[in-house]
Length: 210
Image 1 (cartoon, rainbow, N blue to C red):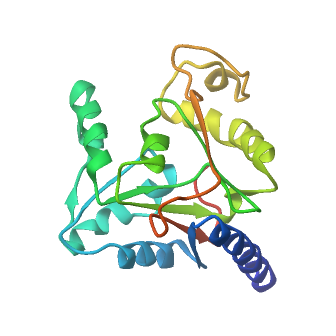
Image 2: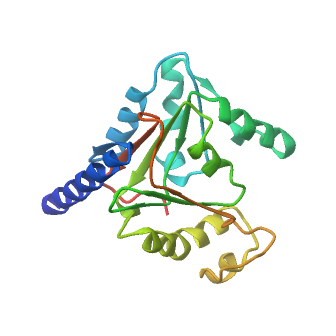
């Protein structure tokens, strides 16, 4: 296990070095508990915070700690219908946007696939800061491998989690569908950040999310 952890750290540090060339700030944490604390440390008090749909963000428990810093929480999850859409739009004005990445390439690019597009849109522009928390399992060789990983490892369980009727939710395999509930509507490759300091990525030495 010690050798595995060392390998995780070395891999993450290599990716973080590549991200720095793209003006994406990177950090490494051995555990999800350390990652949560790091994210908390990155946020200033009395600011606003929200999040995109993310199994990782939900599972690591960071939402339960946000009140520690007197943050204004924009919680789209408490709404339905139009109110939920309004909360998603309000997220673009937040100081901090918490999310994960579907994949991170070895040369430091973030790759994400979205259904509604609100998450990838917020990563591109809007919130003052984007804090990405991603497990070591999200690192892939290149963009094509990243897309393959997302479609083969993440799309089906996400569709099942959301109770959708997409083909992948029935078979467990991506069929490159065009169904009404398709969650692969937009593909975002973040290859460079024109606003240094805006995007911060915390890589965790654990398998997190899908």
